[in-house]
Length: 571
Image (tube, rainbow, N blue to C red; front, side):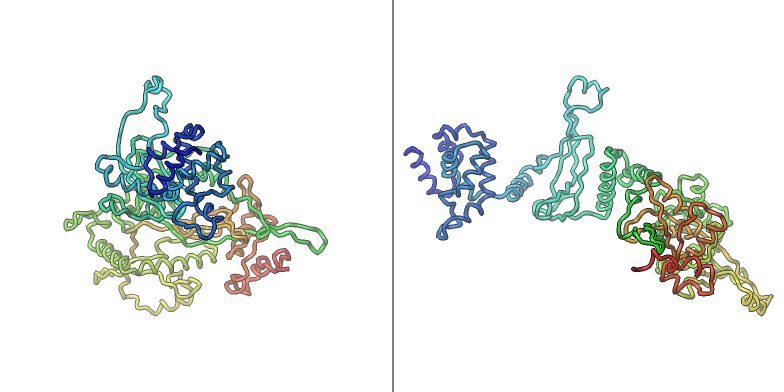
C-alpha cells in the first residue's frame, strides 16, 4: 500500500462518515479495485454488513463494538475474495476504505422503510411510489394484434391504488400505495400477515387490516392455485365481473372435477384406516373401514324443496336458474296463494305476502320471531328432529318439509294468528308434531266436536337451509368424500352417495362401512338387492349400537354389531 493511500485512509478514519468522492478516490489508487463494477461494489458492502457479528466474534476483548475493527478474520477475507474474484490483499485494502460505511450501513428492512418514507413525503402528490406493478409483457400478448406484430410497446396508462400483502421475515408486512399501469390483473397470496399503518398514510383510502371478504378470497384463490398446480394447468379468472363472482366458474369447474374423479384423498390408505389381520383359519387379510355421518353445517339454498340450484343472493328466497322458481319471488309466500305481493307505501318496498290481512300478519309474526333469536334455537331442534326421522328410515321425498319446521294457526272466528314451531320433547329428537298414535286418537275423541279448529297455514318467508354435509371419513381422520343433504339425511341417499363416491376411478372400496343408522341402511340394501354392498360389513358404531338402538331389534343385533367381526376388535 503506497504512502498516499495510507495518508488518505488515515484522514478518512478520523471522520465518522465518508463521502462518495473520497471512497472512489481511494479505490482509484489500486489497479485491481478501480475495475470493480458498481454492482459488485454494492453487493460487497451488503455482504460485509451482514457479516458484522462474524467479524466481531474472533476479535480481542478490548476491541470496541461501536467502531469497525482494523483487521478482518481470515475466513471473511477468503469468502469476499472468492465471492468477487479479487486477491486477499485487495480485500484488505478495500476493507480499510469502506469499513466505516459497512459499520453504519442500515439493514435492508431499515433501508426499505427509509425509501418508502421518502416516497410518501415527496412522491405521493406526484403519483410516484416505491413499489410499482408493471405488466410482465411490454408488448401486446395477442398474436393477431397489429401492434404486437409491429413490436409496438404498450403505452396505455390506467392508474389505480391497490394493496399488496407480502410475507416478511419478521412476520410483519407493510402497506404501500400502488399505481397499476396495466390492464392485466395481478394477485398475490399471503399465508400469514399483519398490517401496520405508516404515520404518513393516515388519509389513505384503504383499511389497515384485511376484511373478511379478503380473507375468504385469499383462501379460495390459494385453493384454486394449488389445484391448478397439481394438474399443471393455468388458472384463468375474468377481470370484468364483480369480485364476488370472479371465482364462481373456477370453483364450479373444480367441484365438477371432484364429482367425476373424486378427491385426491379418495384412494388413501394407511395403518390408521387399514388393518392387516390373521383369521382363525391362518389366512392373512386386510380390511379398510370408512365411517359416515352428517355434520350440521347448512348453507342457504332455494326454498323449493329438493331444488339444488344456488341462490343469486341471500336476499332471495328462490333461485334464478329456474324461471318458475324465480317467479315465486313476486308471489305471496303463503302456500296455496298465487296472488302478487303487496307494496308497502310506508317503506316503499314490496312485502313477501299479498294484501290479505291474515297473510300480512303472518309475515310480521315471522319477522318478530326471527329478530328475537327463536329461529336460531329452532334450527338446532330441527337438526335433532332430522336425525330422528333418519333413524326411522323414512323416504326423503315423503317428508313434509314445512310441517316439521313451523306453521301458522289461524282461527277464523277470532281472526287470531299464531306461529307454531316444532319442539323437541327428548334428546333423541322425537317431536310433538309426529303422526298421531292410536292412544292419541282416543284422546282426541273427548274433544268437543263443535269447537272451532284453527286453520293450518304454511309460508316461505325466507330461503331454506341445507340439512347437513354427509362426510365419509377414514378412522385416521382423512375425509374420502362428502355430499350435501338438502332436506334430510335419508339412508337411501347415503347409500347412493357412498356408491357413487367409491365407484369413481382410483377409489378403494372399503370392506366395512360404519354408520349410526346402518341397520336401516342394511334393510334398504337387502330389500332393493343392491349388489354394490354385497360382502361389505355394515355395522352401527359402538356408541349408538349400545345406547340408541333397542336390544329387542334382532335384525340390528345380529347383523350390525361390530363384535361379530374379529378384524374390527382391539387386539
